[in-house]
Image (cartoon, rainbow, N blue to C red):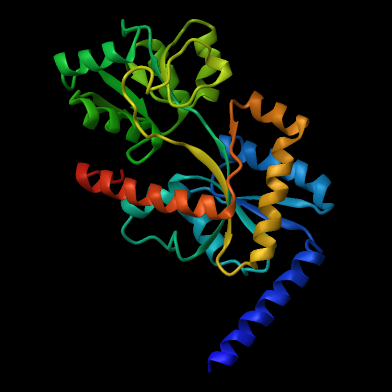
Length: 317
């Protein structure tokens, strides 16, 4: 029995190596569990264009939005693990949703093979014109002095915009009033109009309002050249571990040589001048995780979010 297992493992390895040498022999599908035009979709299309040139195969983008990314993730999990389907996703579907939704149609650890964490999407605390604070410390002090009175906008419970503020509340004891919105347009409209007072969006969506002087950036999750002089959370005195990223995974069972090849192709693409410039335009910071490094970070994030969500009794909208 042991000899048979060894033989099967050897045959599987040989088959995988042979597949990787011939791969890709047909178009590759990128499932994106969000609508066209968002940050994840834009990153997927930047990658697809670059990989089309290097792999000499068409990369087909298939947007499968809905249910906070769960629809696209489930479709990926059920796809054949033949090396021709990958998912480009924001991290909540892999790390946050498992603790928010009790009956997910997929298992985030068992059903996916991590390929690489592609980019970080920095988020920034921004104060609207109705809120007279210049630093994160002042925002925290106000949230302690007037608990539940200072309002903030988000895309709903469970989104990074919401969870980041909840993390700040837990860390500091400040309390704010949550106002959820269905879309960024309405949230920004009310923030700029003074109906809500602050927000924790991604830098890319907020940068035009910041540069126009309509919003004040008071602290950012990761240092970015687009917000020179704005302190990171750690520099502001609040070292919160908040990471929003866009990543690539495959259905579990995808041959390991194909996983390794795709990871190296993605890294090579992001190191090219043309792709680096496009990522910079979208305010995205490249990460060059190996599949093993990405798998370890996913496991760590899942555990940390599970503990945080349980501790704070957070439920989805």
